[in-house]
Image (cartoon, rainbow, N blue to C red):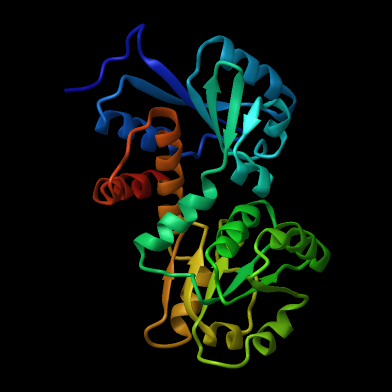
Length: 295
């Protein structure tokens, strides 16, 4: 039986610009149906200069919660009544909950990333990890990597200053982790010498997305020979140039895209809004529909 929207239906939504490509409405409305909750999730295209007005209007209309995507993840923090520790540490918010004193901010990208790795059987504790990129997405990813107690972390970005600033901000929270910035791509294989070819690489840039589907941040095949498992936060296309390069570098090497991260960060947001817990088997059933809508 189809859900019927009524005067009692609670509102949830997405704030971003643009949002026409988002699969969050599909995911969140499916979660509402799965848990039998009278909720409706919409996507609202809000330009930067209208962000404060949108937040004020949504609160006035009783919107229960919202996801926040680019370009608002940092800017929205100025309009919050409170934010949780992980959001403050990462410096970005992707989930809002309407509380009596105002909007409360959370970041579910980090736990969503770690949930995705766990679902694919990838363990970071005690491992050697290289993170590619130091842009907006890298904040949550690097925080999640450092929090997982790896043996060693290398952070590479074309702008070494930006990478050093990011690592310098986050590493004091995790003093037991050996972490460093690699300045240029050519240094990566040398920096990764020693031990087995068992590094885990996490690709956090937008490279590999259309129209640059054949582009990789690192072209040197020597780098990929050191990687055991590659994780790309890009999910469209489903098989990126980075993922292909990891697998082509040797038998038994594995690669994953970011669709599960998208799934699990959304589930974490839904849990914040509703308290409803979604099991892993139930979560996996949503992946085909998400993939179909991504194209």
